[in-house]
Amino acid sequence: MKGVVAALGLLGVQQFAAAQSSTAKPTICPIHGQQFPAPTGLAKETGFYTFTQEIEDTIKANLTNAPFNETTFSLGMFSTTDDGLLYEYHHTDPTVANSTAGTQKVDANSIYRIASITKILTVYLWLIKDGDRRFNDPITDFLPELKQANEVAQQYATPDWEEVTVGDLAMYLAGAARDYGLNDVALKGYVTSLLPPLAEEELPNNPANGINVAASEDPVCGFFTANLSYSPCSRDVYLSHIGTLAASFPSGYTPLYSNANFALLGLALSSLVGQSEEEIFDQHLVKPLGLNGTTFSNPSDVTKNSVVPSGDLQKSGWKNALGPLDGAAGAFSTTNDLAAIGKSILNSTLTSKAVTRRWFTSTTLNERNDQAVGRGWEIFKQRVNGHSVDLYTKSGNWGVYASVIFLIPSYNFGFSILTAGNSGKLPEVLSNTLVENLLPALEDIAKQQADRNFAGHFSSEKSNTSITVTTDDWPALKVTQFVANGIDLLDSVFALFGKDIDFRLLPSHLYKGNQVGFSGVYQPPSPPAPADEFYWPCQTWLDIDDFTYANVPLGHLVFEVDESGRACSLQAKALRETLQRKQV
Ligand SMILES: *[C@@H]1O[C@H](CO)[C@@H](O)[C@H](O)[C@H]1NC(C)=O
Ligand SMILES: *[C@@H]1O[C@H](CO)[C@@H](O)[C@H](O)[C@H]1NC(C)=O
Ligand SMILES: *[C@@H]1O[C@H](CO)[C@@H](O)[C@H](O)[C@H]1NC(C)=O
Ligand SMILES: *[C@@H]1O[C@H](CO)[C@@H](O)[C@H](O)[C@H]1NC(C)=O
Ligand SMILES: *[C@@H]1O[C@H](CO)[C@@H](O)[C@H](O)[C@H]1NC(C)=O
Ligand SMILES: *[C@@H]1O[C@H](CO)[C@@H](O)[C@H](O)[C@H]1NC(C)=O
Ligand SMILES: *[C@@H]1O[C@H](CO)[C@@H](O)[C@H](O)[C@H]1NC(C)=O
Image (cartoon, rainbow, N blue to C red; front, side):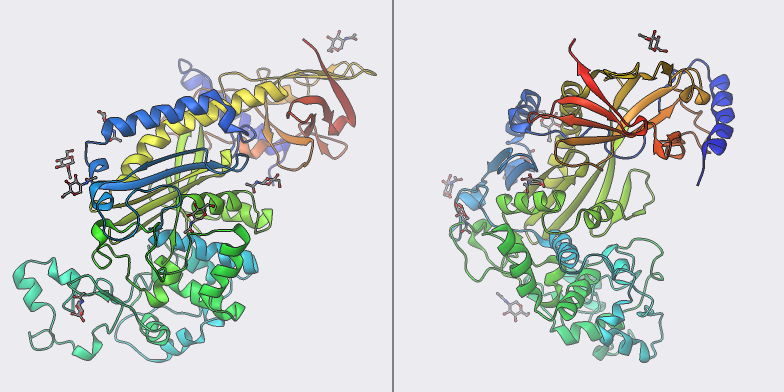
């Protein structure tokens, strides 16, 4: 652990950087995480209303352009402190308006195929049933069939299944088992039907065509035929073939998108719990959250809520039964149900808070700095107000259905976009537009609420101790004055880091009820490091709450709030003193 001494040692580096580029404006480097408490009651915030009106105007202005004009879609936004949906927008295109099956006008109860969003539900069910304690266990503990597969020697490298953990599968890190059969071109099917004629003719039908691979090696299931019917595998056939599928990398090395990783996770959960995946899904997700449009696999009936473009159950992909792939891509859901699921994840309704925090932080780096991979999550980092916000997302594509869910723990907010259309482009196009405007809106509201609730002057009735808190142009609440019994701490203790110390408060999430806790983060502002300087330009996390007083960090502050969330007093835990808010 780096203490004060190490931290002070690093000060020299900052001052050197400052001398190098004295023209650049000094700034602070925030720590990773929430800068203000998540906003609450968004439905009553005019800033949020303005944002949704802008989004609605943009959508309406684009309804005659592709992909909007060729897609049926439902957009729903939600937060953990507002009931139901905060905002919804639905558009029905002619293929659904004129459909002979299912709904002719979509709404928040319309049922879409959500495809690979199922991966999140499979991880979620594992966390609900068993937490993440077994994430370092080898998958062969749950699926011994995979160990048997290793006993048969192959002429190519196969995964060492005893090295592949549950966590590797959940993080796309198995390095193997992308899919069995799905895109195999040794076989005449949907994929070969897309090839130039010679390739379509010659590649399949080995060995008659001269490619020396026995036809018995061809996939027997797990692929689309040219007419878009999917032939599901049985569990045992699937496991034996996934077991011997060649690897691309060793496990734990680099993320590699895989349906089979999540199919295996679902099958393993079923064996751990001793129930079918569908029973676990219904009992531990559908029932506790009161979902009424969400199923683990194909709904048995087409109802007034089903979204089936052109009434074509086959071409739309509605009726593809996926067999063991259900845990990766089988589920169907609605805008309302995804909001309930998203809120329950953000709010730790069905898991412990510690498990949720780990679900939102366990990530693998990706090639780009603004992308990462989590347990089921496709993660994007976006900047707003001088800091970054992590967007936990999962997309899904099957047949004409393309969808995405976003969860943003920093704001306890999320949204889903469910679509049916040929291009599959709408979730991407709409997410880009939406997030660009969403983050500044949520950040603004969070800052305004933090200012209203916590900014002010707090002082002791007994001693000359006081703290002044404010907001400014930078992220997080700022402490502009901190006096302990007549000693100006910013000018003395904290000034050891630099005369111009910048002291901020970050939500600590350590207190409950009417207490809202913060932790201190301090640094002298410095000019941004030159582009060629990578070593420690942003070292704030080395110095969180460095200075303690009798075992409690000086920045460990706890506000006591009234029912409206406004602070009445402030406990300086280190000084063991409660300061009262002074009227201004
Ligand atoms: C919507 O249309 C406007 C112009 O009408 C265009 O600038 C914008 O990029 C479009 N947005 C989307 C999401 O397609
Ligand atoms: C949708 O709009 C595009 C132009 O953006 C156009 O080329 C296309 O024909 C339209 N599709 C339909 C079904 O109207
Ligand atoms: C989230 O949790 C809080 C406190 O535990 C509770 O008051 C609130 O109703 C929950 N919200 C949802 C949507 O579950
Ligand atoms: C449904 O189809 C009919 C006939 O093809 C067409 O005239 C009508 O405009 C369509 N309805 C909608 C809502 O697109
Ligand atoms: C699709 O093709 C498969 C195999 O070629 C065949 O068994 C099935 O009947 C076809 N389905 C339809 C709806 O044409
Ligand atoms: C789910 O419940 C809502 C109202 O609570 C209802 O409007 C909707 O039709 C239901 N969905 C299904 C699939 O039954
Ligand atoms: C309280 O302490 C501050 C900071 O040292 C000092 O400026 C101020 O005069 C003191 N006030 C009283 C009433 O002693």
